[in-house]
Structure formats: structure tokens, C-alpha cells
Length: 120
Image 1: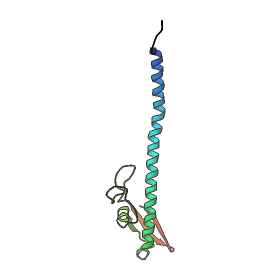
Image 2: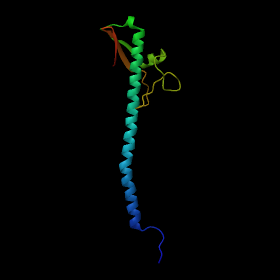
Image 3: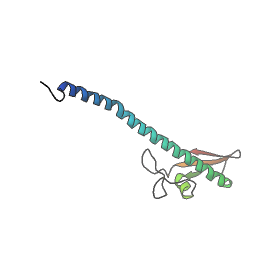
């Protein structure tokens, strides 16, 4: 007799192999997405830090060696030192949370004839 189709054992083994493959692959895909978003966040902070440095160079006369001159990402966007990431042109979006990064603060000081920037 010529049978067409799969036996129950073959189907169970096939399903088990597909489930095992999914269990191994899906966490790697999710983890890769998180790593990519973290790299995007780090890159945006680096860009903002560079923009704050340029802002400090342009405003070196108002900087102190002891007290921080605080500047936010929102201020850097408004003053055109930094580009926004949304359609409105005013907000830098945090890739990790989807929220605005505009309130992130950078401390700018002028120490030993150098502009120094740190994130608060």
C-alpha cells in the first residue's frame, strides 16, 4: 500500500525541531535589537557632546573654570549646533525609550585654556 503524507512521529519531530530552532534564534534577534538601540543612543550622546564642545568654543568668554555652564540638547538643537531626529525639527528622540532627550544636560567648563564637556 502506498501511503501519502507524514506519520504522527515525523510531524512531532518536525515541530519539535522548529520549536528548538525558534528558542535559539528569537533571543538573539531581540538582543541584537537592544544592542543596536544602545549604540544609537551612545552615538547621539557623542554627537551632543561634540555640539556642546562647539557651543563652548563659540562662548568661551562666558565659561568658568569652577562653575558649570549647563546646556541641554534642546538648547543645542534650537541654536543649530545639533540636528533633531523627529519630523518637527525640535526633538532628539531617545532610541531606547522613544522619549525626548532634549532635557539631557551637559556641563561645559574652560579649564587650562581648554573647553571641557561632561554629561550630567
